[in-house]
Structures are given as structure tokens and as C-alpha cells.
Length: 358
Image 1: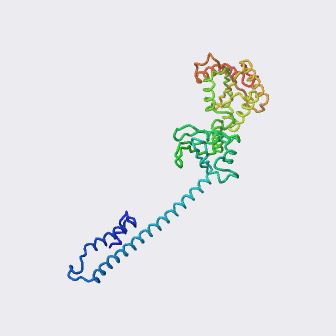
Image 2: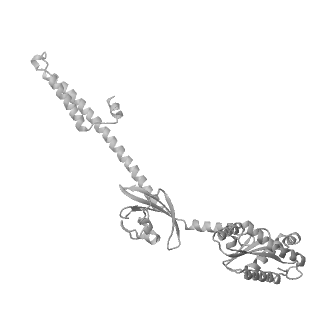
């Protein structure tokens, strides 16, 4: 019964307190005892028996106390071993991660913790050679002063690798510090770039598509750059598709694209904005030169066409400059389409009889 009460008691007295309490009980017992001649002749043996019972009870309670704390000590050791095992596991997992996890003292820029430290060939608490070798922007981490919670930013190393860093202030070992989680996202960036490039390309020809063209034109107008917009329509594509099949129609388109690409510079933008509609944007190019490039492209297209069906394309030019700032992309395309219309009308009349008049 008493043993159960001891186990249920969550706050045990200290040994000193416990013994003092028991001694006090013994003294109180002795003080209550009267001399032998005044207590009806109670013998010394009776008194000793009483004391023996008190001390026997005391021994039992001491044993219970020792057992209790022995169990508590064992339990504490077991919990410490489990906690130590978890800590070792977490440290090992942290070291194996691809990210850098760095904790840097805010006052003296000391690297208090770095999960890559054990992988370094040579490093100490003051200087992490491994991090400096891999992270050429390391000084930005050491000198960080922004207290924004969870700030995410990017940095590029001298190797060309791109890193995403998450930075936030913390208290580490009673010292104010910054924690930096540094992740190499070079592969993700390259994958994103390839996917974006693919999203901007026309699958049939490999040139830019309408999406890219519209975004490029928006930037061009926003920057007020001077350029010439060449709006082109591939003549007879429906005739080729209907009479010779879509595979032949695709070949017809590719031969046209090749003829135009030869005339353009690397800085020029060439895009397919519809089934048989194309646009070229020539920046810092006089209108007369742009016109001559279209004529040269048409000549090349006709000279290298050896099919039984006729080949031609129509085009219209419009200059983009300071006086066009207020015009939208749609309005510019409409004006270029109007400029191309007369050329297309004449080509329908003279289609494949001789070079179309433009």
C-alpha cells in the first residue's frame, strides 16, 4: 500500500528531509515516554521493542526510497540514450543533405555551425574552407544584416552554379545569429530554362511562337526601341495542304522559314504567329534595308523551290518608333497586315508566273 503511494507521488522529498522527518518522529516518541516508575512499571524491553518497530519502519521506507530513485535514474539514462540516438541520426541526415545549413553569429560573423564542415578537407571554427571554395558569395552570408523573417534570395557562384538561399534570424546557443539554408538549384534552373525555351518555340519550324512574339513586342514598346516589323503571309499553303497533303505543307513551310532565316541577324526575332502568318522584328535597321532583306528572301525561296506547285509569300513593313508609342501590338499588326494586303493581292494574280510585285 505504501509502495503504491510512493510511486504515485510525483514530488519526492530529498533524503535529508526524509531522514530529518523520521528522526523528529523518534524524538517525539521518546519525549512522550514517562519514567518507568510513573508508567505502571513499563519495562525497558517494551520501550526497545517500540523503538525497534520505528527503526524497522524507517529502514523499509528508506529501501522504498532507494528503489524509487534507482528506477528514476534508470529511466533517465534510457531517455538520454534515446535522445542521443535521435541527435546522432539528425546530425547524420543533416550532413548528408545537399543543402548547406549555416549559422553565423550576427556580431562577429563567426560560422557557429555548418553541416558540411565534416566533409571539408581542412576547416575550423573560424574558417570553413569547403564553403568558401564552393560558395564564392560566402561574404554575403557572413555580412548579412537583414532581419526579415524567411527571406528567399538567389546568388550565382563563380562556377556558374545558381543557389537559392533562405535566411532568417535565430538565437543559437544564447547568441543572436542568422541561419542560412543554401540549396544548389542549377539543374532546376537549367530545366526551367529548357522548358521555357520549348514553350516559346514553334514545334513545326523551331522558330519563336506567338507567345514569345507578344512578350517580346511588349518589352520592345515599353523600351521605346526603334525597329521594323515585317508581317509575312505564306501564299498557297492551303492549296498545298489540300492537294499534296499536310506533310508536304510542312515541308513548304520549312523551306520558307529557311529562306527568311538566311536574311536575318542573330539579334532579329522571327516568329510564327499563325498557321501561315509570320513576323520578323528587325531592331536598329532602316526600313529600306529590311525591305531588301525580304526581297532577297523571296528570291532565295523561288530559286530553291523545285516542286510542281507554285511558291511565294507576301509581306508588309511598318516602322516602330517614338511616334508609335501609343499603339498597341494588335494595332501595329493590323497596320502591317494592311501594308501586306496589296502585295498579297498582286501575288494572287501573278502567282508563280514571275516574282511577285511588292
